[in-house]
Image 1 (cartoon, helix red, strand yellow):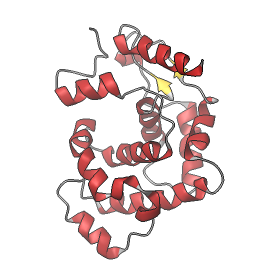
Image 2 (cartoon, rainbow, N blue to C red; image 1 turned 90 degrees about the vertical axis):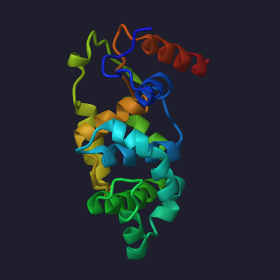
Image 3 (cartoon, rainbow, N blue to C red; image 1 turned 45 degrees about the vertical axis):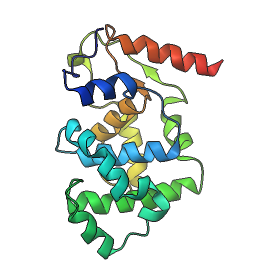
Length: 193
């Protein structure tokens, strides 16, 4: 089976690529989790975050935004002592701020509706022959970044937003030779019927 060039041979990457990356996600909590993890990854490798993902779920109450939004200084201190997550004060505080921003959006619509409207409710399917053609950002990611920031989100620059869009299937950036590209298209189309 041919996969996207970035995958390599580490099992955690292979499983992530084959089972998750690029699959459309519409669940609010799952979308919130992935946005937080993409922000936590800033300056680090994605594999670092994949190895810590279960620790993040434990440390951040299963990404329950209602709970995270109420975290106080004592909880922040506890998180900063947790070796299972990235112990960066700005990123931890951003997670709390992002939970509050998430709740603001949730007062108006679902988080899923808010995000998926950037792509008119359906994945953008790109035609990349090689991973070298895949951009680090896009005009849509720039718009998403601006609007998220307007709601108070942190660590949501255009590059992070684009990586997020790829991860949650808003953008299908599997290369044309990757076996997952067409599978994801077919799965999405089947769910529509």
